[in-house]
Image (cartoon, rainbow, N blue to C red):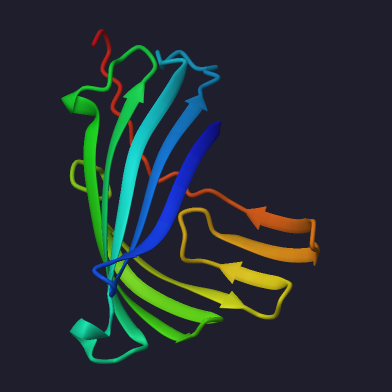
Length: 169
Protein backbone atom coordinates (compact mmCIF):
# COMPACT_ATOMS: atom_id res chain seq x y z
CA UNK A 1 0.00 0.00 0.00
CA UNK A 2 1.10 3.55 -0.60
CA UNK A 3 -0.57 6.90 -0.28
CA UNK A 4 0.29 10.44 -1.25
CA UNK A 5 -1.31 13.37 0.54
CA UNK A 6 -0.89 17.11 0.38
CA UNK A 7 -2.58 19.51 2.77
CA UNK A 8 -2.74 23.22 3.52
CA UNK A 9 -4.19 25.21 6.39
CA UNK A 10 -5.16 28.87 5.98
CA UNK A 11 -7.68 31.47 7.08
CA UNK A 12 -10.44 32.91 4.92
CA UNK A 13 -12.43 36.09 5.58
CA UNK A 14 -9.77 37.00 8.18
CA UNK A 15 -11.53 34.82 10.76
CA UNK A 16 -12.47 31.36 9.44
CA UNK A 17 -9.78 28.64 9.72
CA UNK A 18 -9.87 26.21 6.79
CA UNK A 19 -7.95 23.01 6.13
CA UNK A 20 -7.84 21.32 2.73
CA UNK A 21 -6.15 18.15 1.52
CA UNK A 22 -5.98 15.96 -1.56
CA UNK A 23 -4.95 12.34 -1.49
CA UNK A 24 -4.26 9.28 -3.59
CA UNK A 25 -4.11 5.76 -2.16
CA UNK A 26 -3.17 2.50 -3.87
CA UNK A 27 -3.65 -0.89 -2.20
CA UNK A 28 -2.22 -4.05 -3.74
CA UNK A 29 -4.18 -7.23 -3.18
CA UNK A 30 -2.31 -10.50 -2.93
CA UNK A 31 -5.20 -12.91 -3.27
CA UNK A 32 -4.75 -16.48 -2.09
CA UNK A 33 -8.44 -17.42 -2.03
CA UNK A 34 -10.82 -18.81 -4.63
CA UNK A 35 -12.78 -15.54 -4.65
CA UNK A 36 -12.05 -13.34 -7.66
CA UNK A 37 -10.64 -10.04 -6.47
CA UNK A 38 -8.99 -7.22 -8.41
CA UNK A 39 -5.22 -6.79 -8.30
CA UNK A 40 -5.50 -3.45 -6.54
CA UNK A 41 -7.81 -0.77 -5.18
CA UNK A 42 -7.44 3.00 -5.55
CA UNK A 43 -8.85 6.03 -3.81
CA UNK A 44 -8.78 9.61 -5.04
CA UNK A 45 -10.02 12.07 -2.45
CA UNK A 46 -10.42 15.71 -1.49
CA UNK A 47 -10.91 16.81 2.10
CA UNK A 48 -12.02 20.19 3.45
CA UNK A 49 -12.51 21.12 7.11
CA UNK A 50 -14.06 24.39 8.25
CA UNK A 51 -13.61 25.55 11.82
CA UNK A 52 -16.35 27.80 13.14
CA UNK A 53 -14.65 29.73 15.95
CA UNK A 54 -16.02 31.89 18.75
CA UNK A 55 -18.21 33.90 16.35
CA UNK A 56 -20.63 30.97 16.71
CA UNK A 57 -19.88 29.66 20.20
CA UNK A 58 -18.97 32.96 21.93
CA UNK A 59 -16.16 31.04 23.67
CA UNK A 60 -12.61 31.48 22.35
CA UNK A 61 -11.66 27.91 23.32
CA UNK A 62 -14.65 26.16 21.74
CA UNK A 63 -14.97 25.47 18.00
CA UNK A 64 -17.28 23.58 15.72
CA UNK A 65 -15.75 21.62 12.87
CA UNK A 66 -17.44 20.68 9.61
CA UNK A 67 -15.75 18.15 7.31
CA UNK A 68 -16.53 17.54 3.64
CA UNK A 69 -14.76 14.60 1.98
CA UNK A 70 -15.75 13.48 -1.52
CA UNK A 71 -13.81 10.52 -2.92
CA UNK A 72 -13.69 7.90 -5.66
CA UNK A 73 -12.95 4.34 -4.49
CA UNK A 74 -12.28 2.01 -7.39
CA UNK A 75 -10.88 -1.42 -8.28
CA UNK A 76 -7.96 -1.59 -10.72
CA UNK A 77 -9.97 -2.75 -13.72
CA UNK A 78 -12.65 -0.11 -13.28
CA UNK A 79 -12.82 3.56 -14.11
CA UNK A 80 -13.64 6.20 -11.55
CA UNK A 81 -17.33 6.47 -12.39
CA UNK A 82 -20.45 7.39 -10.44
CA UNK A 83 -20.60 3.95 -8.77
CA UNK A 84 -17.19 4.63 -7.20
CA UNK A 85 -18.19 8.08 -5.87
CA UNK A 86 -18.64 8.59 -2.12
CA UNK A 87 -19.33 11.82 -0.24
CA UNK A 88 -18.53 11.66 3.45
CA UNK A 89 -19.14 14.50 5.84
CA UNK A 90 -18.61 15.05 9.52
CA UNK A 91 -19.29 17.36 12.41
CA UNK A 92 -17.36 17.85 15.62
CA UNK A 93 -17.07 20.02 18.67
CA UNK A 94 -13.50 20.96 19.54
CA UNK A 95 -12.18 22.26 22.83
CA UNK A 96 -8.75 23.91 22.76
CA UNK A 97 -7.33 24.20 26.27
CA UNK A 98 -4.18 25.83 24.90
CA UNK A 99 -1.83 25.30 21.95
CA UNK A 100 -0.61 22.04 23.53
CA UNK A 101 -3.96 20.35 24.28
CA UNK A 102 -6.98 19.86 22.00
CA UNK A 103 -9.94 17.52 22.66
CA UNK A 104 -12.69 16.75 20.15
CA UNK A 105 -15.80 14.60 19.75
CA UNK A 106 -18.13 14.17 16.83
CA UNK A 107 -19.28 11.86 14.09
CA UNK A 108 -18.51 11.01 10.49
CA UNK A 109 -21.48 10.31 8.21
CA UNK A 110 -20.68 7.98 5.30
CA UNK A 111 -23.70 7.40 3.04
CA UNK A 112 -23.49 4.18 0.97
CA UNK A 113 -21.12 2.50 3.45
CA UNK A 114 -21.99 -0.48 5.63
CA UNK A 115 -21.10 1.58 8.71
CA UNK A 116 -22.64 4.89 7.72
CA UNK A 117 -22.37 6.57 11.14
CA UNK A 118 -18.99 6.57 12.93
CA UNK A 119 -18.72 8.46 16.24
CA UNK A 120 -15.31 9.51 17.51
CA UNK A 121 -13.52 11.05 20.48
CA UNK A 122 -9.87 12.04 20.37
CA UNK A 123 -7.15 14.39 21.49
CA UNK A 124 -3.88 16.02 20.52
CA UNK A 125 -1.40 16.66 23.29
CA UNK A 126 2.13 18.05 23.22
CA UNK A 127 3.80 16.83 26.40
CA UNK A 128 6.95 18.87 25.78
CA UNK A 129 9.13 20.00 22.86
CA UNK A 130 9.94 16.37 22.03
CA UNK A 131 6.86 14.21 22.71
CA UNK A 132 3.56 14.66 20.84
CA UNK A 133 0.39 12.51 20.81
CA UNK A 134 -2.10 12.91 17.94
CA UNK A 135 -5.21 10.75 18.30
CA UNK A 136 -7.48 13.04 16.25
CA UNK A 137 -6.47 11.74 12.86
CA UNK A 138 -7.28 8.81 10.57
CA UNK A 139 -3.54 8.17 10.91
CA UNK A 140 -3.10 8.43 14.71
CA UNK A 141 0.48 8.86 15.79
CA UNK A 142 2.99 9.43 18.55
CA UNK A 143 6.15 11.33 17.68
CA UNK A 144 9.34 11.85 19.62
CA UNK A 145 11.94 14.34 18.41
CA UNK A 146 15.49 13.13 18.98
CA UNK A 147 17.23 16.24 17.64
CA UNK A 148 16.73 18.91 14.94
CA UNK A 149 17.16 16.35 12.15
CA UNK A 150 15.67 13.17 13.60
CA UNK A 151 12.23 12.17 14.79
CA UNK A 152 10.74 8.80 15.73
CA UNK A 153 7.18 8.44 14.45
CA UNK A 154 4.87 5.61 15.47
CA UNK A 155 1.84 5.86 13.19
CA UNK A 156 -0.94 3.52 12.21
CA UNK A 157 -3.55 3.81 9.54
CA UNK A 158 -7.24 3.26 9.99
CA UNK A 159 -8.47 2.06 6.61
CA UNK A 160 -11.98 3.49 6.64
CA UNK A 161 -12.70 3.10 2.92
CA UNK A 162 -15.07 0.57 1.39
CA UNK A 163 -14.80 -0.65 -2.18
CA UNK A 164 -17.53 -2.26 -4.24
CA UNK A 165 -16.20 -4.86 -6.65
CA UNK A 166 -18.73 -5.98 -9.26
CA UNK A 167 -17.85 -9.05 -11.26
CA UNK A 168 -17.72 -8.29 -14.97
CA UNK A 169 -18.26 -4.57 -14.49
